[in-house]
Amino acid sequence: MEVMEKRQNGVVILVPKGRLDSNTSDEFEKKLLGLVNAGETSFIIDFRDLDYISSAGLRVLLKAAKELKRKNGQLAFCAVKDYIKEIFELSGFVTFFPIHPTLEDSLKTF
Image 1: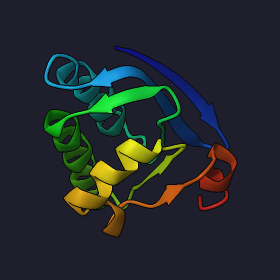
Image 2 (image 1 turned 45 degrees about the horizontal axis):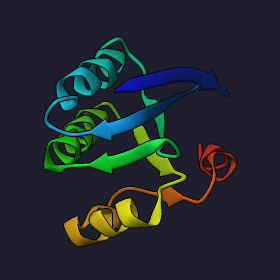
Image 3 (image 1 turned 180 degrees about the vertical axis):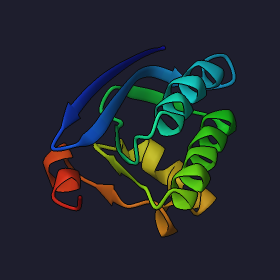
């Protein structure tokens, strides 16, 4: 899995590409939590290029959310494909992660 990283208006934007599963979740966790531990507190995960997410990927997002909550940080999602959004709905993620249709919509919330 490839993860593009960029910054806009003080927000770290991560764009994972491919699959976020048991084979790639460790790499993504190191990237995301490494940034959190380095002091970053504002994140958007742009899911436009993500094809699949497993429970291992969901676990990474939860772990990051817990860390950010302790640091008064913020994590939002955007451009989530319908079938991935369905997984978020089934797992209850939609109740505690802000999900926006576009990156621009997410950036307006910071």
